[in-house]
Length: 99
Image (cartoon, rainbow, N blue to C red):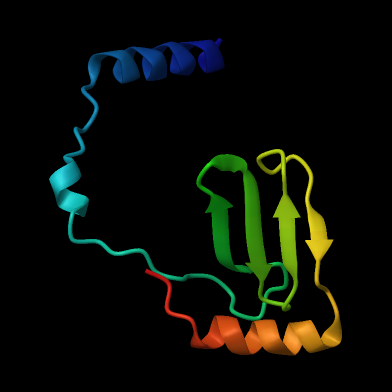
């Protein structure tokens, strides 16, 4: 009985209180930044899509591998996963400025 009474009060209060409005101007000066653990495996450091066919996407992983999808991310296939390529990809992505 007490639980149903408290539930009714909670619902009544939530129905009659106005939600706070969020103005997008508050966020106009925010810039994207990297957050989270830096040593976590599975990080994506680069991403690119084919403009004429956006279902084809390439991603570069922090581990040095490059992955490709041809169906908008439903399936991914690794490409160029050799050790030499990992060294080259690491150098390329660490010296690449994304804009």
